[in-house]
Length: 283
Image 1: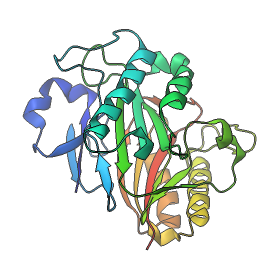
Image 2: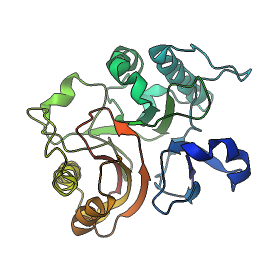
Image 3: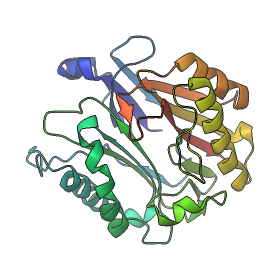
């Protein structure tokens, strides 16, 4: 099982003292945690299926510990993809085997984020399946000079793209869901109209949650999965989002799904109040 740790921005100076285990794979810097704590470590959340390879969080830092491409967001993003590929090749895989890429950046780089499209298109999807993806904004990341952090999961099993028929993904470098063995790895979802690409229900956490989780159900349906096979969700809630209303909508539709919740500084579309990364096990 992999361990995910969350450390708040305010607690970064005390990170070495807070860290509770040496078995951490993924380190996510967040704005806040629901109980007001500064640090949390979770084992097996999200779960990973047979054949999965979870890379340690990729930061734009070279072997000497020096931040690369300082001040260049796109350059750092490309370097992280290439570093992920180097790590995977050492394990007999490549970026072609990636099932999800979740990236973390800051509001200051939101305007140039679209320029990562070319970097992703040139490196991902080589075997015919683009990974699921999500992007979250935090006010700062792991250390000064870092503009992006990348969490990458791959699989040794054959990949199958899962799409309910949303044509918007035909031009994107990510896929609604990727099925590898019995695990359905999904992109991040928010309250988006999949046809018009307009954000839905601005300012309304309850309505956005209903729309978001309805989209997740559509992906499950396309994979031949049922609601009770959604096993885990990672919810990132913006400062204006209502965590209780989001949880209520999720629990009504997916009562069996375990949840991890953290606060973020914002999302790539500022109209969204939260984004969710779901995982299902189809058995």
